[in-house]
Image (cartoon, rainbow, N blue to C red; front, side, top):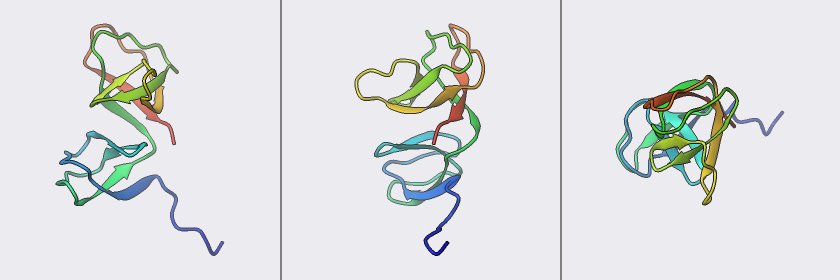
Length: 106
């Protein structure tokens, strides 16, 4: 295929704010996990595939396979208000708990 560019599992994009390695990053409506730290306006490689432990809304319990959304630095089950869907729960998460396993959704 002449028009094939790359698999897309990891994408180099311009950071819209300072990011640390392992943080969730939303650029436009594209979500990924930073593969390395980067300053605002620097290129950051975002992982777009895999299961990651990410910070969640502590007061929510998750069952396996629940749709998950990004909300100001936290993962939530609440998809209202135009939040971006980032994936599905890859395991149960208790209420309260600070982190949950997220299967990224491309």
